[in-house]
Structures are given as C-alpha cells and as structure tokens.
Amino acid sequence: MQHDYTFGGAESINRAIGILVALDQQQVNAMVELQIDSAIEECEQEYEKATADPSYVPDKEFIVRLDNYLALGGERP
Image 1 (cartoon, helix red, strand yellow):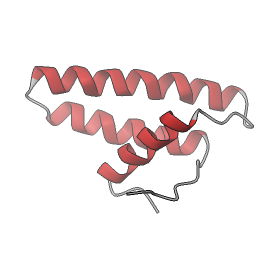
Image 2 (cartoon, rainbow, N blue to C red):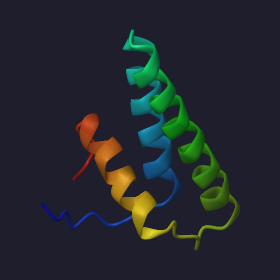
Image 3 (cartoon, rainbow, N blue to C red):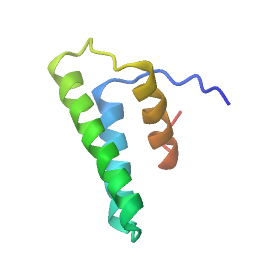
Image 4 (cartoon, rainbow, N blue to C red):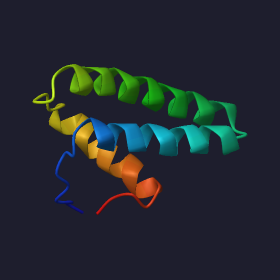
C-alpha cells in the first residue's frame, strides 16, 4: 500500500522519536527492544541533520520508515 506521506521536517522526526521511546519503554522482548533502539538512533541522527539544515530531506527509504513510525503512534495525517 502506497502512502502519500510528505516529510514534515525535524518536528516529524522528533514526534517519531517520542513514539519509539514510548514503545521501547513498554517492550519486554529483548530482540524487539534492540530493533526499536536502532530505529531511535537512526531518527536521532536524521533529527540532528534536519535541525542543522532546515532544507535537509532524508532519503526516501528513511521517509517511508518515518511514516511507519508516525503511524504506530497515530501521528500520521
């Protein structure tokens, strides 16, 4: 299924980090927790880039993952 998500800048990444942190705190499966931690780390790196340069746009693969993270928290428009 194709989503028409448009990258919303650093604030979108920041919201995704909050969603992932909340999921991480609820997780009891160590393997899933590691996956979430990896996603948080990737989001933090992209957030730093987006805050340093407001015109920065992550690659398409990250934007797809970001859309999925936001959907987990009901944050996707």
